[in-house]
Structures are given as structure tokens and as C-alpha cells.
Length: 449
Image (cartoon, rainbow, N blue to C red):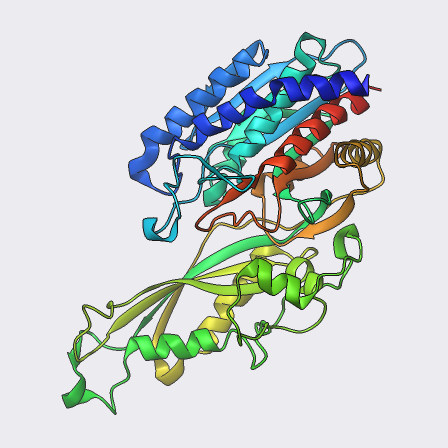
């Protein structure tokens, strides 16, 4: 049976890759209002592919003001469980074209990797589901519901209304979230914890209007310098997060294996420059998976090219925060806002606008679906899978777990340390893609047994 399924996956793999390339060519950037038609086109293409893969019920759906999602279904055979397969078809903005070695929306293969925005995160997840469905064809051993979301990359802002509208359609015994990574190209991983996420936009005002820096500089504070001092207070001298009241876990939090991540390996994967020191303290995996992280990801202020000798009256920054498993993301966001307000220098006026909140997640390892997933990963890769944490957030995971607490949640994926998700030259390791397709086909078989 395994040999037959392996052969079936090999047979459908070229079509799955072709489908992935078709999807990558659609610039479905959910954060860009001007790309709305592309997001709709992407949803329509996914719906067509799911129908062609044998799902008899497929619809492009929205709830309130959500971006379009795709919902497909095949009922289970008598006595078989229902499995929800999740992915998302929206992608991050490509950034500067000059930072890419090829067109971000034209897939290009180089050295065993497929480059392009969404090749891994997460249109590859869609392609993995398609391959598993096609490999089983009309002998699908379980009921399958497929949900391909259209706004994951902007934090799923319409998620509560979406879940309320489609609660009955989304009910399942097991959920497979194909939106995570593997430990290495050759070592598969089942993700057992996710950090939560949130952000704030902080605005600082010191003057009613800009004034001459020579005539007023010295006594009059400028807003940009005040903002810089506030942002600098977010970390201590070693680069550890200095906001009080946040949860800091330890290595192995969330059921992850005690994996050895060396500084040399991390520096290479992150692309750190020579001489730049790592920030924070403690085990690297604990810092990545079990502790908070804060980064300034944008500043509104005069550009260097447009700068004049003027004291800046107002400046803004967007601050992103990852929240450790076990913490309350809303409370953590409040703590970040309170810290920034408390560290405003020279009486500067500060306002803080909180962003969307995604709760952290810890899986319950050891269940039947968990064992089925490990068996499938071990068989597809030819070596044991590890349990790993992830530093990112998937808002749908925690929301679904709260709505359906009895469902077993599995987090898998096709990414590896070289993927560079969200960055320039995002890529998919094609050998990993093939193994992921086989693993999901095996998982559906295992869940039926």
C-alpha cells in the first residue's frame, strides 16, 4: 500500500508543482488594497484546482469584510474521521525588486529550489493538499474539508466573524495546518508551539509645527529624537526585551524536543553580518520559541533625501512583538503600550494604537493524530521527525483550538532554514516539497486506519 501511494505521489507531483507555479504568478498581496483583484483571482484559481482535485463541494467565501477564502469538502466514508486541511493563498509584499535575483512573481528554479513570493509561504501548502488529494483520487479514506484563507499575512482581522459564519462547515476531528517549517532540509518537524503576535503604532509629538533647528535647537526637543529614546528602552544592553510583565519560557516549552541550535548555524540561516552580536540570553531555541521578541519594523519621519534643518514635530513607529507560549497576547500588548508611554522623555505627548492580536499556542502531543503524523513524516523522510517550536504566529490555529477544543491540531509545512519566508528570494526546497506531499498522503491513510 505504501509503495502504491508513493508511486501515486510521484505521478501527481509534476501537476502539483505546475499548480504552485500558476498560483505564484498571481500577486495576491493581502496588505495592498490595490491588489484586491489579484487576491480574488488567486481564490478563484485555488477553487478551480480543488474542484479538479476531486472535491465535489467548493466555494469562494467571505464573511463581513474578509478577503476571499476557499472552502471545499468531501464527506467521509462511513465511520471515517473528517480532516481539515488548512493553508493560505495570500502573500507578503515582495519588497524592493532589486533585492530579488529574479522576478518575485515569476517562479524560477535554481540549485534544487523554486524561487518566488509564496513558493513556500504558503502557496506550497495549497499544492501539498492538492497532491495528497490527487494521490488518493476517488479512494480518499477520510472526509476532507479544505480551507485556504486569504488574509493570514495581515493577521486574519476578520477571523472571529469568519469562524462564526462557517463554524459548522469547519468542524473536524483533526486539523492539518500546512504553514510551518522543518528543522533542516533533511529533518522533518511537527510544530508543537507557536508564539503569539501583536503590534502597536506609537506616535510622539513635541511641537505644534516644525521650526528652524538653528534658531530653536537645544532647548526645544524634536519628536524623532524623543521617539528614538523611547524605542531604545525596549531592550537592555544585551538586547534582551526589557518590557516588564511578559512571560519568558524555557527550552522545551510547548513540548518541543531539546534541539541543539548552534550560534554558527543560526548566524548563517539569519544572514547576520560579521561582527554583529546575537541579542538576548539563554538557549537559542528558547529565545526563538519560548520568549518574547520586539522589533521596530517601520518609522514615519522625513526621509534622509528630503530632510531639512528643521526640528521634527511629530514622528511615528510601528513596533512588532512576538508573545511567548503561556502569555496573554492582549495583556502583553497592553504592557508594551504602557512601557512606551512611561518612557516618553521631556514630557513628549505620546499616543499608542494597538494592532491585531494573535494568541500563542501549545499543542497537546501524544494523541492518535499526533502519532499518525509522526509515522507519516518518519516514513516520507526516511528518518525520525522532531517536535519543534516556532517563533511565528498563525492566528487561525489558536482561534480554531478555542472553538473546537476536542480537535487534534497538527502543524506541518514545507519550509526549511533556507526558505527566507517574508524576505527577498523566498524559495521552496523541491526535495522537501516532494517529501511533504508524500507525508500528507500517508497521514490521511494513517488517520483512516
